[in-house]
Image (cartoon, rainbow over all chains, first blue to last red; front, side):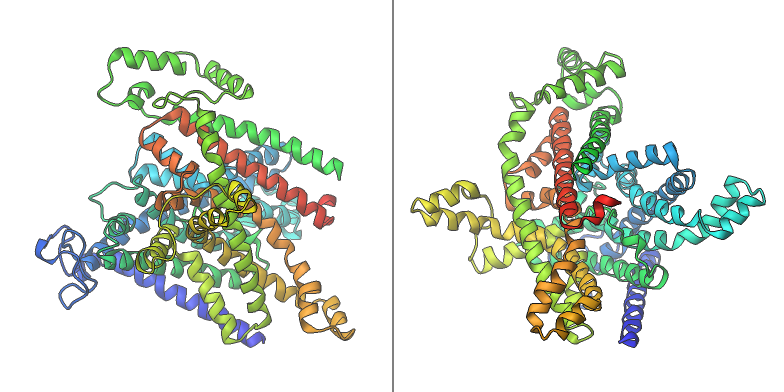
Length: 286
Length: 326
């Protein structure tokens, strides 16, 4: 039974790694592997199905879908990766400070986190983007606002345990500074769950961005984000379902890749499941 | 138990206060002059000045917040900028539809999630288990609105089995109508509810099934399960009466969090299926930049979420006394 379990972990990790690396590669190498220009229209070939010329078919303006999707991956992945990274750094710092110093610092920081956790994620993102206006920067900022609390909570719980460990007490006894203890002793032992959460967060961010675009509040066109490609596709879904099905599949496979990778990493790095703790906020999934 | 309830209620006060501050601060996030931005480019100077006075934008920040909180405490969420109605009555007219959809989605999520999770745990390590968990992964990774549209295409457009958009009678009055001899009203109401609730619930069903599977597998290794088998009880009885009851505890604890997701996801589902709830209203309010309405809706969602979490925590502490001791 054990052997089977180990095998499953590896399958999850390896499949996730293969999918996410392929998508990252496609995004980075987009100019090399694109078959057409991003904005190159061919009105005689609108809504074409897959062919030798257009591998995944074309959209409502006859633009090549494969090209749009790999260029879109650049934007959608940046909107996912950058906010997740910023939220992870911010949340980790808050969690470290709260867990390490305890007392009123902890109480205050965690109450603030509670307040942010108290809003349904998508609603808060929508409200922020609504008042600040759409655009890559504002969408990213809104994602940071909803994501940082997850990291703060997880790192805080790890820090609470770690600060009582013998090696931390020893460092304190020999007069190490708070900074040194936090960043040299505690942080290196608390990053496992953060990495897992961040990997799962990428999928979540991609879904949230696509939902915002679908509702008309994401990154405005002509940027070929996946959300917009899918949103356009859904408008013509009754007569030409191909466009929506392919772009939806692209989003699903990418999110699946990062989720599998996150699950695999969790089993590998965080067998106690800290990063799936009961406080982890449900995604703003969409 | 009473001490726990009081402590939990007291904890709600600072959180609710924080939510009010954040909701209020949305106004401060607007770049430039909020009144001019809200009214758009065609507004006259007089209109802008009027709106500034109505919203109290000329007052110092602290006074504005105090006025906002003071009005909220009297149940006044302000007036919509574009509909000649109070925010609370606009929200009041739609909150029922949203709650109905979210609860229906939650019920679907629990029923599907628990059944599939138990099945996977009972068949642990087999192809059935692998297939079910792959299905759960797909459910988690799928955009809610994409699934909604696919379902609509299949069941409404192609097969014509269920209505594509709109809502029937509110479920409560539909049940009443059915009891007074009009079952068609209830059937129509459920037919309208099925697709949006299913589309909204699938993601949560996937998460719940994974959680139930993990916790069921853990419970099945406990001593009391072995004892139950040793007593000669049948497998089904051991599964349902002994294992499942304990395996469901972690599920209760995440129901509150799931509800937040369902409220948020409802914005998408309501938009697709033309469901006349708060989600649709949110999009309309945001598109019109009707700030008092947006603030009211955001606060209302947050309060609903907080209330559900409170109820879940309290019921969890009833089911599992260890929580109260912590």
